[in-house]
Length: 283
Image (cartoon, rainbow, N blue to C red; front, side, top):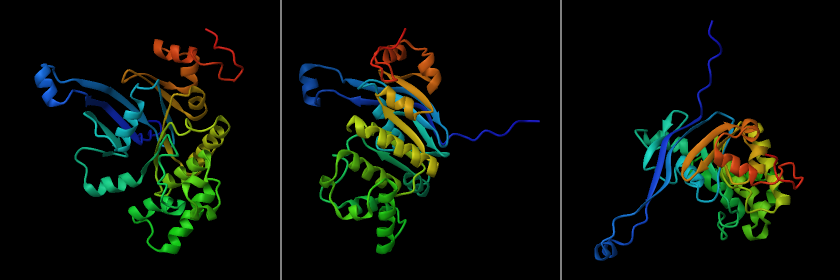
């Protein structure tokens, strides 16, 4: 008798690559007789993310993790490879209607809450924008009610809908960003360094909020970070990026206890004791 059928992953990334043309302008290349130059930002990256799982990508600045995130969410077209979410290919052969429905189910939380909110819009309009864009509600009263519910959900007051972004602290702005991301009732959130621009005292509050929301709504996260302490707190599995390649993938506890790749060991050895004792990790 066969065992229980395994649930297919929500997200499947296969052979993802992205190159950027960093050549000089055409005329300069002709005069100076220089060839075209290409930067390989991401090379042949593959991974899956299960439903309700948090998969983290870690690596130093320039390793390609944010480029992967943008390709997964649909902001950047890959040079090669595929991104399949719930059986729908983001870039190839999918019906337009399927893609519209898919994009409603994917949202992104950006690194800088100061830059990702329109300073000329009131908070209520910012949060309501995806609701209107995807036609989730048309009645003004219903939209305002939904906006108030979202603000309350992330720990703010519904009356804050009438304020502007500059009237809030960094942590409160990130809560607004999370409320906006949730407004389209997504299934999958791509979080690109969502706490790195915040004070340390505020980071834990935002991370705990994100975990509570994941438990409440069954969300799936792709979590991008360079902070290993944050990743250890959030992730089910971790992928390590180095020079545009995914060099190691392992469950969180296993990766911290027994890293296999030399670069992973270097990352862990460079970080103070994650129990915050201030001592370096033991070799």
